Image 1 (cartoon, rainbow, N blue to C red):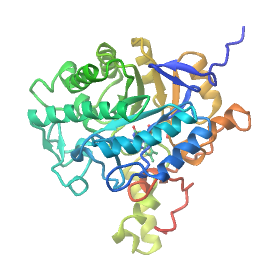
Image 2: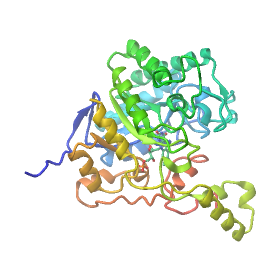
Image 3: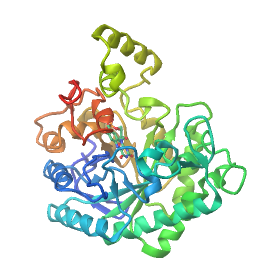
Image 4: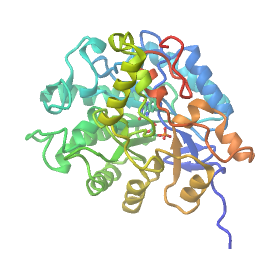
Length: 399
Ligand SMILES: Cc1cc2nc3c(=O)[nH]c(=O)nc-3n(C[C@H](O)[C@H](O)[C@H](O)COP(=O)(O)O)c2cc1C
């Protein structure tokens, strides 16, 4: 008997009804105003995704407090009444279109800069990976409070749920990683201690928001020495289930590990073009710099489905839904993952930047491959401008 195709059917998972099993993974948009409130440009972006058939949208990361802001200037924030009000308008519009929307809550930890936040950069430990001071216990409690307030604000703003960002080397991911967390107090050391900050966020949020959907994005592994292994992330996934997490999206990587999170080409042209000094060099010198950049940041392999093994290991260990992200390039892969219960859902980021209507194209049979060429200009470009696809061409402002 043929396996039924579940990909395009609506499904209730993690307490949220998705219109299908292909969702938009969190993607920093840089489309909020200087106070972190969403703009009309962001609404337009989400409208295109909703009309384009995505099963649900996870927002780009939204900051829970000033100290956790990203280096990208136009990061969204959800730390006051004005931002809640602005988000309420946005979530209402999404619901009118029938698309669920989840707020990804983040603190950038050691991966931000003082120039961006106007405050000292903090991390669980002082290590060579970044310039940050070790957090005091009082600062840890402050961060927990900011996340709990962020969850309350997201609920009030009408989001269908939140995703707590525990991936990609940001603050909570730094806490759970044995490479980045070298603390010897109750917030570091063994898995349970490294996980404690996430546990506190879940437990304290639950008393405030009850069974409101709360999912997590976590690294299934880290490619750096002493980073998370799949075995360790399986243990963390089990702890997440124990504290009442409703679902897990599995990714990998940190800023230090370069493009391990997105993979594909090293976008050296745009890295050089963004650097004032380097960009003034003659073309042949830029070429040499590019060649050195390619060597210095070797492209991690494989480029496709690179988180699937870790996600499947986690799926086997827990009874909550698991979403896999990373290097999904065609419908056949999605059908294999979903219909064979390798994971419950898939999520994508870059393919939707160039084709917000990708799910409709898949559904109607117009297309089975994504158009994204993994040039990664989008990720480097988003440091200084709002999110868009450059399709391997230098943006005019940098050429
Ligand atoms: C421009 C850009 C911005 C991103 N911003 C976020 C973010 O805010 N939060 C997050 O968890 N991941 C972010 N990611 C990572 C993606 O969600 C995803 O994990 C990664 O790109 C791999 O998926 P893909 O192959 O479908 O692009 C971003 C990726 C890109 C390309």
